[in-house]
Image 1: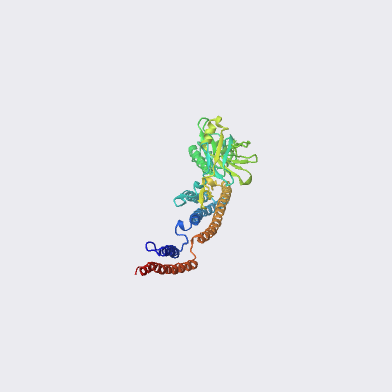
Image 2: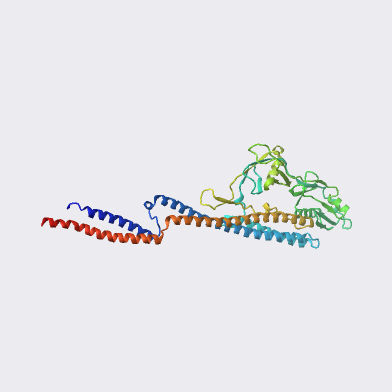
Length: 479
């Protein structure tokens, strides 16, 4: 028997401390609901669980990102729907104007309404925003970079892969011109009995003349009528003031026809023997050489109209390129520039990038093209004659096809995001379940342990008290 060291009490105290530690851990699990409250509880499980928690929070944020994307797309589609309604109305006006039961004044009223609709379409394309970001001005479809000023890509399909696309301008587009003689002053300076009167049609735009009008007044009326149908009229001061009619837009599709009501009037106006020079369309040569620097394949082809060229290839490849008027002037004034090579550098960025996953590069690209009048080909419209109204109908059909294609693309984006959100919710649920299995306390099991530790603590305290009483028996030996 020993006095200085009570081994039984030490052993009882040691076991009591272990029991109290287990009881404290059990209380922590019961009060927090977590099986792992610190890294020491389960180092491997702690690391795995917190990595899972990172993924779970990322999945929740990605789902919200997808919702934001749906909202942006719905905003864009809502605006495009209004544009489509206005384009439909403009087509209806063109069909109305193509009917010859309407007078010029009626058609001018139709033209005025169409111009206001054009202004509103342009405003919507420039000002439609989502969270201060423009949606319809081409901001989210700027993935092409041109190396030549005045060359722009108006439309590019999603099937155009990144790379350098090269072509060579072999012929610049030209305007149609109609060269006539000069207005003969003498024919209009005679007496009222012999002075010429009648009318002239410029691309079906009718201009009537009276015997009281001077040659300058007649020229002014011809100029205004020509302007109304997209034709510019000028006097060639270097060639006897001959009248020169020039189409405002280049290309072979634009014709100029000037007809007088009588041969005598045609002679008086100098339009009796005109010389027509048809316009030419843009011509290019695609670089389809077998090298890595050129992406056009040997099956690529193009069609041109005026200063627009549409390049197509297999698999939905399509891009529409415009050579603007300033480039026309440069190419026409310096023939050495004809044949200049143009490179279109197509990138993989420029679209609206939606982070729809928890990790890097788990994104979805949303491309929304420019919905401007020019991009849809309806920036220049003329409702003032039967023929020009028919051309407007064709332009409206092309614009409607373009809009329908854009809306179909946006609808596909929205459907994809719906499926993405469903997938994210399933992944979130599965990941949460796995996280719960590692982290969450089984309350029934833990309550059983708590009761066990509680009983052991009470027993330990009782045993420690008895162990502390053992040295007192030594006093009996000292009596």
